Image (cartoon, rainbow, N blue to C red; front, side, top):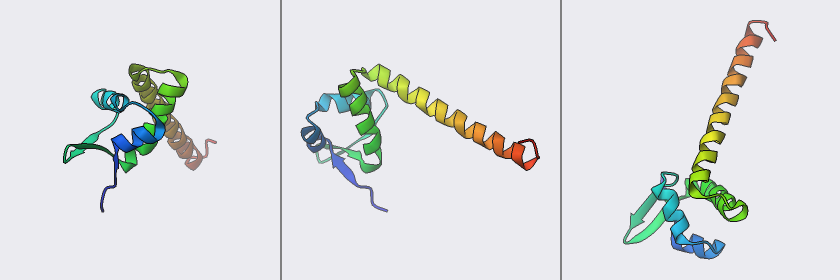
Length: 97
């Protein structure tokens, strides 16, 4: 399976954002940047996250640290919701709900 890479320079030009923003996300550990022949890329599977981070930063004025905190909390809530659903299913199996 071949991984599709998105050139950061082109992405930033298309959405009129600074490349430094993407670099800051990488430095904070929020994105992984791949370098090929001195060009910087992100993997296509990270595109949804990058777009979410871009909206939070540019539309809502949330800084990089805030983006990291929000991502952490959303992941935690998602995990808790999955656990709740699992527990509900177990209760149904045992006639509790």
